[in-house]
Image 1 (cartoon, rainbow, N blue to C red):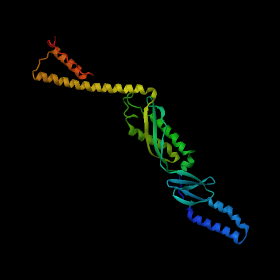
Image 2: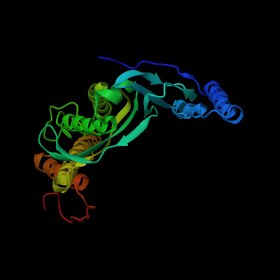
Image 3: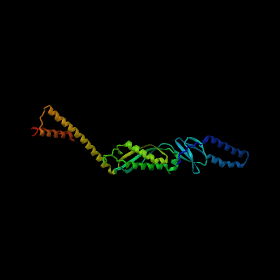
Image 4: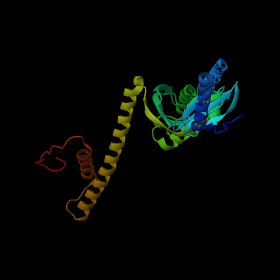
Length: 284
């Protein structure tokens, strides 16, 4: 497989001076010698002028002569080359590609919306020009394909797959690294260098977003309740132990159960407890 070959053409300024001398020669021959044969130089001068071209910063020109690749000019400036060369301009600038949000299924089948932000640039102009039909379209299609494959390799979260250590939502650094490797492998054929690739948008698809939000809220509420109960149990244990140690009150099993029940209701309730004055005994 061929790869890029660098060439340095002739300076355009020196060849412009040669063109000026030839033009003076033709005009001088017509004026002084009155010989129309000097007009035969005109087509050659026009062909000579076709050899001039410029290369802007972070740009390149791919040179082809009658179907044969001759090399790539990466240097900036004003040049002259064989007038029969066809020249294809390929930008070497870093480009930013923000893909469309696509709906795909994650590893466990949940529909999600995802897109990727890709920073890339042409590294091998020969591959970009000749190994693929349209390298810009190739980048777009292969990036979408890589995103679809990546999304199907991981669950969105671990609610349905508690054994999953790496998910799209929690393992963003590892997922972005895997995405960059996948896209790099796909774009090598086109001579494209991947500078950065990362997930730009990630969410459940609209048809299940509300259900998943409720599930996440329920999980959060359960976790909070569990923490509250753990704290309340510790507080009740400390209160009973201190009351018994200081001989403030003697508890039998019924009184202890009643005290624990009341404290747990107060500590774990959603609303403020309303005190009720008991005029009788604890058992009354």
